[in-house]
Image 1 (cartoon, one colour):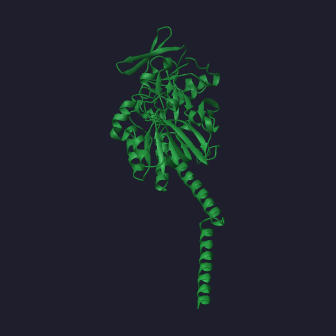
Image 2 (image 1 turned 90 degrees about the vertical axis):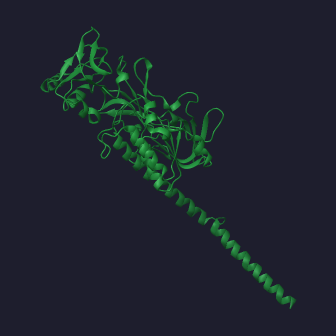
Image 3 (image 1 turned 120 degrees about the horizontal axis):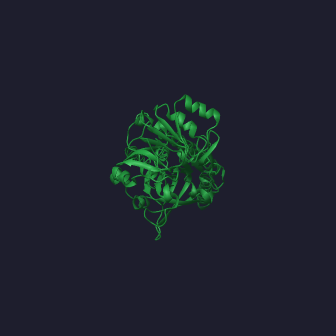
Length: 411
């Protein structure tokens, strides 16, 4: 599943155990802070890209803020071979796999990336040092921090908590931040009873009373889609637009109930959702609620490179922002690739992993081409290694002739 948004991040860290520790010092002590590739974000896309690059014998550093977007979810679904697996287990397995190929992982938040001698200078902030930078999360009610993607930071240290590394190429897999509608109580249930994707959660809430909170023109589409999982669907018009005549007919034909009026808050039975309270005090019973969160690309660290996020569209409706990238992850900025939810807001975990693997292979191919060009240029240069060998042979022959001539005169 592709969503979440905050939740109990400490619980994710507990599940990962020692594997979630701060690797800054260990990593920096093992090298000079220069890598073929720095991967910003250690979720499914970032680890899949790192796996491909590590197997290609590239030096790779993954910088991760340790706040996966799907942290609140009990399990992932729809990922072949991993259906029902807790998100933390996938991350722990992935980290172990990439480390087996020499990939290094460090905890922190990338603050910026800047051009540097044909590559990039990446500045990151250690965990707990200063402001959150690129790792800030989704904003729910009253500005509540409801979550972040998997994204960022490490390098060679400074007293301020900021560290620096250099990379020939960048792979950005920082994901999205979910911005929830400002309805009291949504954030606390996000990823459990307050949902987004039917393919991620629909089976788990099948046949239950499900509400759809309308905040935009895609709400009717959502209601009809969720109707596949339950015959008890209620569309709360809330702040969304009034359905047109055709939409009313489709909703009626599928037995979708429509409730006017704004939703004032959620009603809970213990830790679970039991209903929605309208502004007039009326309570409508639902056991699950689907909302359309704002989907903001976590791309602030790319500002210095001039790589700006673009509007993300679903069915012609703007739903957030995304980093522009080609099918292989290549962005408009030379040397920068992006993969996962930061480029495609509808990507599931499996699709994000696939895009990360594809980008990793593309980056390796790009570096192979670059290294070949450099080798050819060196071979053609009179001061290259081959040229030096030719000069050395000429000098050696001249010395031998001189020695031979000198010996003859002496005789």
